[in-house]
Structures are given as structure tokens and as C-alpha cells.
Image 1: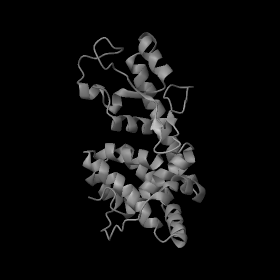
Image 2 (image 1 turned 45 degrees about the horizontal axis):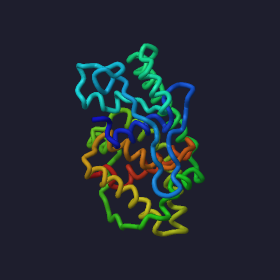
Image 3 (image 1 turned 90 degrees about the vertical axis):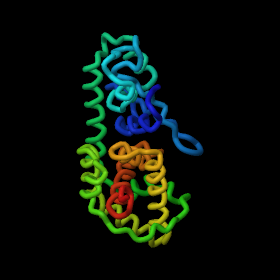
Length: 247
């Protein structure tokens, strides 16, 4: 069966787009000259996918095996190593490695919110120039905490939103400044995120999966931590002021 493509996107987001093996840190996104960038990392199973595979656990369901919690984002070489030499890479070692790496990625992102400035925001939303504006109408604002509860978001997502709100005034000032030069900018910005949001909802995604897919969308094509965090800051800003996660 294997992990689904959305699951791989979430995994790549949690891993910061780099190999999770300590001291590897290989960047695993292909920067496309045209079109969307492509994730080239592999979703490696911690507890094996099939009987006979490294660390296979017969008590697990297929859904559990292919869940993001049982996957590591690795380069091809390290994926081969953990599966060919399982004695050196037991289940608990890989689980601990995954937890440590993803925690470091999240902490780096949350710490970077304090340093988000206009240049990072400009890099993060450069795609907006090619987005057609779609009037979004008037929405009843729902407080972030209410949206979090309504969408059953976990503490992990809650922490990202709380950290992102630290940059709210900077993002608002940036959007206002851009609107002075291009009155359609705010609507184009909203339209791009809302198009992705409703598309993912139509595919059946919800809760933390939907939130993390939106985070991955906000970071697409970005390599520098500051730019990637700026992308999340924009998403959190829209989370607060428009109907992303509203309905």
C-alpha cells in the first residue's frame, strides 16, 4: 500500500525538508525551474511495511504502518542503511530519533517567528504576483482559540499558531504596505490560500493533517528557515482574519 502523497508532504514538513538522520541534514526538495518543487526524500517505515521487512510488527494495521507517526523522512542512502542493517537501527532508536529531529525542526521554526521581517515575508509570498484576485466577501471572524477547538487541532498545531501570532502585527503591516502599491494584493493572498484550503478539504483532509498540509503549502519553494517561518506566519495571520479553517 505505502504512505499516501499527502502523508509524505506532512512528513517532509515535520522534518523541515531534510533527512532526519543526525549529521546528514541533506536537503530533500528538488527546486523546479517551472511548476511546483518536488519532495525527493523517502518515507521510510520505522516498523516495516511488509512481513520480512526490517522491524516489522505483525500487531499493526496497514493504516498504522503507513501513518506519519511510523515514518521517517530520509535520503535514499540512509533509508537503505536503516533497512539493511536493522540491528544498528532498532525501533526505539528510530522512534527517539524521529521525535528529537521533528522537535528540533518545530523549535527552530517557532524561535524564528520573532525575526520575521518584510524581506522574509516578500520571499514567502512572491507567488502572489501570479495569483488572480477573488473577492472573498465579508466573514464573521472566529477567534483563533475557537477555530482550534472547532477543528480539533492538537497541542502541536496550537503551539505553531500561538508562536505565529507573535508575528501578526508585522504581517498585517506588510500586507497593508503591499496594498498601498497593489490594492488587489490582500485578495490575491487570501485567494491563493483559500483555493488550497478548500481543495484539501474536498479531498477529505481535516484537523492536524489539514493544518500541516496548509503549512507545507505556505513553505513551498522556500529553503531558508526565516523565509519558511515567514510563510507560516502568513498562514497564521490568515487563520485569524479570514475563513481559512472557518467552515
